[in-house]
Length: 253
Image (cartoon, rainbow, N blue to C red):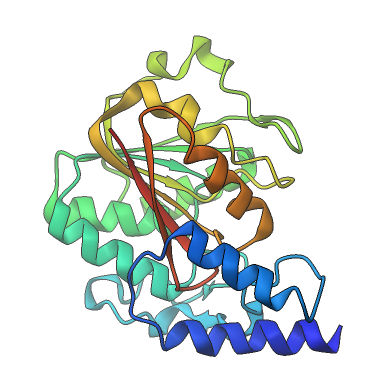
């Protein structure tokens, strides 16, 4: 247990010293194989969560100041570094339609982006927890950021099977559903395979060249998912950014 803790703490500082760019799956697999010589514990590449917890009010994006003052980022939410990277890409790439799997702090970030840079933007957020859906909708309304944000309660089939995409007669029939520019996968919560179906199930709604991101990508389950996605026709896995719990990135052809 001590060796696992030391390695995961080391990974946090080692990743911080790497240039922020996506590194290939083979790079991370070699690193995983090396460290597993010293510890056979799961998620050996994923940094200790305690290093990533930061007060929401300290997020280094001026436009997001004041939105997370009562939140802690990076534990059970997306971490600040991943949010900064996504914000910078949002401002640069200006996506109009974003699909999000798992609502939370990122939902508020996307809403703020739309209010400042893309007033015609649409966010379609899929959430397994009806109480979390209601909480986020209330918070967005309180912030005056509800325009263009549509959160749908989409239950999961089972702990390892992910969302029940057969709901609503198919995703294309959801109100306000449009071909999307961005897909951000930070849910559903569940077993190692719970997020696998997201990228292939949403592929038919992706615009050519649409990009996707997978949070928690340095966990064993997500590493396996990325490897399987890399063999899907029309899906490109670019790699994993060495920030937070690992931010996987890719695109649709």
